[in-house]
Amino acid sequence: MLVCSFWSFFTPTINFGFSIADPSSNPVGCKESGFGVNLKSDPKGQTFYDDPEMSYSIEKPVKEWDEKRKEWLKHHPSFAAGASERIILVTGSQPKPCKNPIGDHLLLRFFKNKVDYCRIHGYDIFYNNLLLHPKMNSYWAKLPVVKAAMLAHPEAEWIWWVDSDALFTDMEFKLPLQRYKNQNLVVHGWPKLIYNSKSWTSLNAGIFLMRNCQWSMDFINTWSNMGPMSKEYKKWGRIQRSTFKDKLFPESDDQSALVYLLYKEKEKYYSHIYLESQFYFEGYWVEIIGRYENTTEKYLEIERGMPKLRRRHAEKVSEQYGAFREEFLKEAGNGKGSWRRPFITHFTGCQPCSGDHNQMYAGESCWNGMDKALNFADNQVLRNYGFIHPDLQDSSTVTQVLFDYPADEGPW
Ligand SMILES: [Mn+2]
Image (cartoon, helix red, strand yellow):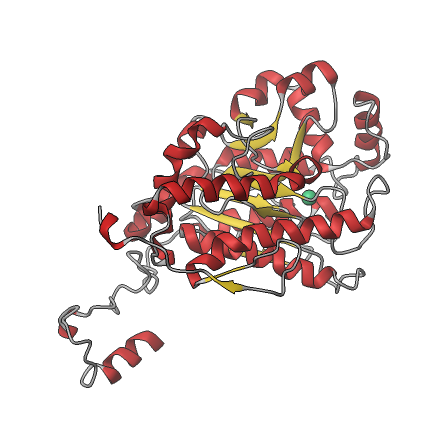
């Protein structure tokens, strides 16, 4: 509305010196606002939203979701196009201020990083800081949120949960969705660790991609029934501990619950869950943070030899430059041991908000590591705004990016 009214207000006097479009042909698309999708129309035809029995609560299962979602898309054809690739990133943190004095600042920067990533790739994002089920707290809090997000976003094929203590450290990399076409849930994990080592850390449940479908609705039910909302919560804690010898705390947790389902009901679940291990779907910060400098140097080296990667461009067309870069990254491999930018760095055990970090690490290494990772990621964003942090350990200083693109080497 605001854009539209400004446009009509300014149109008579605007003069770009060249013609971008005939204003009467509605150049900003006021009738169908929202970049190709229609944000202004909700046809009268009934959908699942009109069913008084439909509940967003995790306690009430949703049935026939695939049909219901399809029906909604039929009523909203502008969203149907591209629906199969549409992602909404969901994240969040606790309802109260952080106990750690720098916790809220860290959470803000972690969130900024996710907003940056989503803006660059055209994804929507939802931040939740409430317990949607009073008993489903800490690591269980995400399940009620993911369920509600599935219902709130029938236009999205995937819900991507990313923990508040994880950040994108390769702003260009995109999920290889094609690879997951036959699966409904994707997590970073290793079958050998589940079925041979029986370890509760054989996968990481802090970041997952879940298809918006009935299978996922059912899976969330089964999964959350091992959590604190269940009468059998205590029992599940005991079962998890006796199954996974490396689990040292007594309460049932979401990650052990997921490993348990894969371990115990392999036939039922294994074929639907993709255990991604070919890149850092999420990566343990301890094995990553020492590599950022070397990675930065490698990328600079490539750019020095390839001016088209240094060409200034609008942030909106960043994906094109990510695609250009891809051919120079092939030899790097991806994931552990690679000099490629790690996709997601996860500060497992650091507890940025509470400050109660795992005693295995000095708090300093957590806070310094986060600062470095956040600056490393921010440099990839800031650059399109003309600036860069010269020092990864100093988030408050920026310098300008110099223009050094040779005019005789382009365009392509
Ligand atoms: Mn985490």
